[in-house]
Length: 369
Ligand code: 13P
Image (cartoon, rainbow, N blue to C red; front, side):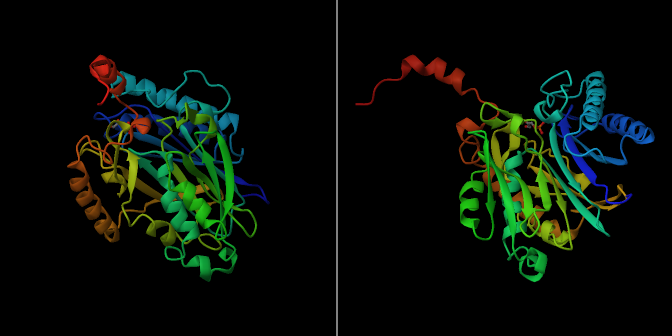
C-alpha cells in the first residue's frame, strides 16, 4: 500500500437465486460473479476480490481504495448481482432476485436490498481479518458474539492482557423500530448494552470501536435505510468483518464466540428460531427444515490490499461439538412444531397467514362470559 493511503474492505451480500430451493448456490452464479469482479480488477477499479456463498447467499468480498459507500464500487456490486440474477432466472433458480428490492441503481447499495459491511483502515504490518457470513438468520444474530468478543474477558482474555484493549470497546447500536442509534461504552456501560442487545430483532450492534483511539474493530451489514416498516429488510443478509490481533481480539478469541451454537431468528420461511451452526464452506448447505441456520468464517491476511486466503475457519474438529450440540438442539426445538419459541413471535415472522386466518374466524369469536 503506497504511503499512508487507506484500504477499504467491502463485503456485499445478496440472495440472487437458490439451488435447490433455499439450500445452496449454483456454480454458474459464482462463476458469473467471479467474471465480473475479475474484469473490474483487470481495469484497476478494485485491488482484489473473492467470491463465496453461504447457503443461497452470494458474498462478494472486495478490496479497493475508494472508501466506504463509494458509488463506483456499489455500482460494480449491483451490476454483478444483476448479471448473477439473470443467470439465476435463466436456470429458473428458486426465488431469483428476491434479495434485490429495487431494479435501478440509485447511487448506493444501502437502500436497495443487498447487505453491505465496509471497513476502512491503514494496513498494519500484518493485517489478519475474519469475515463471518450467515444464512437463515438476520443481522441482529451478531449481537451475542460481538458482546462476548469485545466485552467479555471470559471469552477474550486480551481485554485484560493486551494494554491497548484495557480501556475496552464502544458499541454502536441501531434501534430499528425508532430509526435511531446510540453508542455505548464498555466496560462501564455493559449492562445498558446487554439490556438493548438482548433484543436482537429491535436493537442491532452495527459497529464496534476501540476506546483508546476510536479505531473501528468490527462492522456488520446493518444499514439504517434497509429498515422497512420497522424491520431490517429480510434480504439484508448477515455479514460481519473483524480486524484481529495486536490491539484487537485475537483470531481465536473471535472464533471462540461461535463455539456455542446460540439460538437465532430467521430459520424456515424466515419465521423460526434455531441454533446457529458453525460450518466449513462445503457444509454451508442448510437442508434440514431449510436449516439449521449456518455461519461460515473466511480468514484472510491482507497484504497491500491483496486478499491472501481464504482460510476456511470452521474447518476444524474443535467445532465438532458445537455442530453436535446444534443438531441436538435442532431435534429438541423442532418437536415444538408451530409453537413458540420455535416459531417466532407474530410481529417478527417473515411469512404469516395470520391475517387471512383472522379474517376467516373474525365473526365466529364471541365475548368471554
Ligand atoms: P433465505 O432467506 O436464506 O433464502 O431463506 C428463506 C427461507 O424462507 C428458507 O426457509
